[in-house]
Image (tube, rainbow, N blue to C red; front, side, top):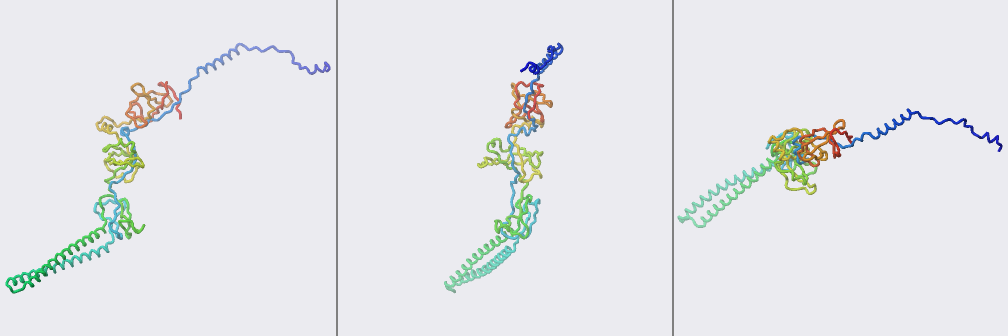
Length: 409
């Protein structure tokens, strides 16, 4: 290739410039920026420790003395479906739901027409037997007089021995007949008593004082002591409950029955009135267990009944510690609230225990507490904490007063 053409392919860069020089102030600025970044990284604040917290719950002294919680139902010790002793038609029903009745009060009347006819027949038979007795007595008196006259004639040899024997036999026969008639009178009297009782059974009375909770029959229906005739025959007039016999039946797990004793104090709370604490006591522990459910039945009685307590209401009960109840009776415990926290919220510190309380800004406060017992996985705190405060669970080591923490959700 020709030299002129090669020269055309050459790039002309122009005159070379001297390298740029950095001023001293720019270099100093760069050094300062780098030093500040390193200092900010080196002296950065440590990340806040994350902790889990629980809210302190306030409980009453009574709740603090609870050794066992259970649930059950209000039941009536005396409750009955009032029925009749015989099958008959209902003529009159004198009850309504909610009515209070006294013992012996007439609740209903049944049709007594058939029984009354049998009663009248037995009454007539008794009257006939009594008439027959009067007739037999008269004949017996006559036979005895004839026997005495014949005996006198025989003594004077004016009558034969055969006539005397005939008179004696007649008198003895009438005496035997009199005994039979008297027995018939007794049988007729007893038969009359049976029908009189059946007549009385057509009047259904209250077996005890109480409240009618159900009305099961109406006039015109048939009633029977046994289920007969399918759904057309009633087996009861109504259900009567003795409200003075209300108590609580509870099924306690057999693993905790050792915490229950007869006479033990109990605090009951009806599901319908959750803010009403009802003082109760243990009446009896039924001496048998249910092998299917592994429970033991416990009967709890109310210290004082109230009209708001109704049969079949759901109720929760708290069995109280006897020692706590004795302290309350002696005036050693006041009714202020105590706190209840999880067991892992307290940390042992020598002979006492402490809790770490988290404030509103996440600042930790070291708090010494006094404990009063344990319930399952919770500790009862007598002093040092109040309801609503937040305490750290499984507090990490190295915490100090004033330390800031981050609460983990």
